[in-house]
Length: 150
Image (cartoon, rainbow, N blue to C red; front, top):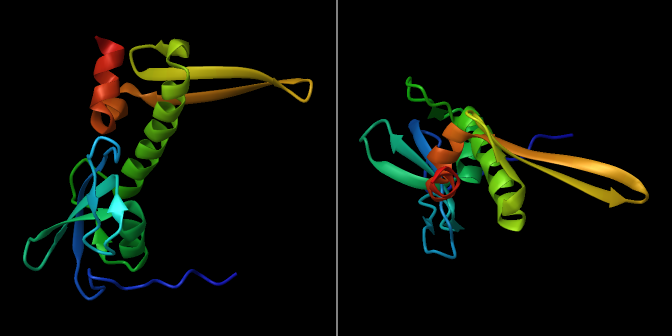
């Protein structure tokens, strides 16, 4: 299977970009923007800075992955890592989606928030777990974090 073709848009592959952070917005609340790379409306917003002139850009996660695969997106040398943050954001997004459906099922301990959903399907009991670390929840969904801790 051939690799997906990388398409260069506004952020050129000849430049280098430093990953700074990622955040989840909410289109309904107006907490979104347009991607500086492709122009699409985005709610998962990645902040990068161009190395040559230190200009900041806000791009979507798909465009950030494209820059990473083009080998022009680099981590900032600090505690953040693009792929680790992408994974954590994905876990938080899954948890929050389920939380919005079943807030009464949340169980919180010192480090994690969990929702365990049990359902009967085709005569079999199926269990699904949705969890994320509280620190990640605080970072990516502070409003939900505050709701659960207050």
